[in-house]
Length: 455
Image (cartoon, rainbow, N blue to C red):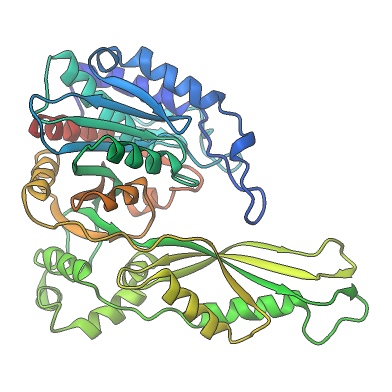
């Protein structure tokens, strides 16, 4: 369906302008080293200035303050006291160069015609697309004189892709002010298809928790020397062996309560014998665990703690033995486990006292939010209004979001990006050729318009 709303062309122009501002997250240049303090923040200042110009009604009706340097927090005062809602997204993006992209990452080019139009650029899906849908819906409501029942906060984080200090500071600020937080919605799941075999209807997956994101370092320190006379096991070889051992001993796959509910909910729309199995997940638990662990990388990540080696460091010269070799493991901890349990398992898998396992940064899995009640129903109704054929289901988010900071103050924290995303499009997150269909951006605006009207 092609949008015929005259406002949509202007909304697309505004999103394209915001994507062209390269608000690239400050990244670590070495293991354990962060360059945030020396970063160029001028694109972030330009983004904040652009919002003032592009969304005048928001800046007339809502109050805005800057938290932790560059995180933007807007307060929309409600008609009466009550738990505040928080609609959040982040506007920082991961780096990208032109190399390998069909269209330059910060050019915000549109290709195709009609319903096939696609917007290319870093941040379309992660996460300026979501930020802009919130802004567009709030701008329309504010301009029309709408006032929510209770306070609504709009939160746009500046460092979600690195440390998440902006969202953390906002939570601390709201607690200090005595603000009771209720409904929270951040990026996360999306409307997807072909998630399960024999299930043909689109599925709207809503994150009710997220896996813990923790980085460990593996460090080997031993005598160096000339590379012409190496010992049997060099520091780099010992580190490589440790990495292989970790890779060859994956964490045990398990079916948690959230995933079991997702299987039952989605499986009810399947066909044949698989429908019978899916809708009786509690009876076929061992079979389903085995299937999910092998079906795809996405399903495997749902049922177990995952480990990815993301950084390696060793040696200063080509002809000298490294005296220190180090690897960073990015670990996504499944709900039901902890950082400390994960560390102990890594040590057992490596089984080498000369390989030191240390925590670089740590987050346990987020508490599971309510999967029923007024807040869940509010979200489910808003999704159904925007995507009438989609089945709404909870799931455990495998990636980290700023919303985890709010899990300490609310039991109704949800993660959902209101866009249809194919498997190929999801694969462009943090990768080349990030893009989104223009029409789903328009539908995302309708989603937030409906959600805000229900607040």
